[in-house]
Image (cartoon, rainbow, N blue to C red; front, side):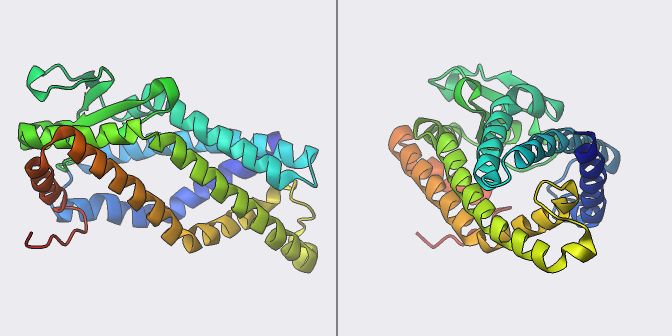
Amino acid sequence: PLQVAFYALPYLLLVYVLSFPLNLYENFYREHQYGFATQSFLPWFREQLIGLGLTLVGGTIALIVLYAVFRRAPRTWWLCGTVVLVIFLAGLVFIAPVYIEPLFNAYKPITNPQIRVPVKQVFEVDASRQTTRVSANVSGFLSTTRIALNDNLLKQCSLPEIRAVMAHEMGHYVLNHGAKLITYFGIFILIGFAVARILFEAAVRHWSNKWGVRTIADPAGVPLLALIFSILFFVATPFINTVTRITEREADAFGINTAREPDGMAKVTLKLGVYRKLDPSPL
């Protein structure tokens, strides 16, 4: 475990440092350029450090467990690795609303009776401390599932618009999109590990003398495994986008049929188009 940790921590830190310039431009400079960001640099950077800390801890634990499985199952490591990552992903989604999201924002139950929220697990999040964007989301898994409407939505939108968004998010919950997405990603991880097995073993056969990496159980192979999965994620982008588009379309249909606020849905969609790539027709 210590050997894996000594590889994992510097590697994860190096990845963060190398990606920081693009992260700074994309999530700070450009957000300010378009008038979306409300944070100065120091509060923004503080949140980045919190995220880095979570990545270092969570990533290191995941790699320690993963490589323990690789050592114990040298022939079926790709199957066992899939099981480990799916369990880790489900666990991460499960604890996120309780332990992770409160590190960045404050959540409080919505009590405004005018909004007419028919369920209890609905919260307001103070997203205005970071952005001016109107948004909402469903997070968590099983008993921790909750809906969060950001305070920009509650302040900038009319009641029909809020109810339309609320119904859309309820659609994600009722249609079990969280569990479905974990399943879809589990299938992708399985395919990814199957392909990674072929590519990793081929790379070891050709370049093991230069690299010193002999088997998948060697933690020095982390960068190669990460490179393979990065390429696979890039190739699978159309598939991932299609899955996202289908789930959002299903939630839209559920929201329109449940809230009965077609005008509210249309108006709030135009507001979302301020920061999303939308091309609304005249209708």
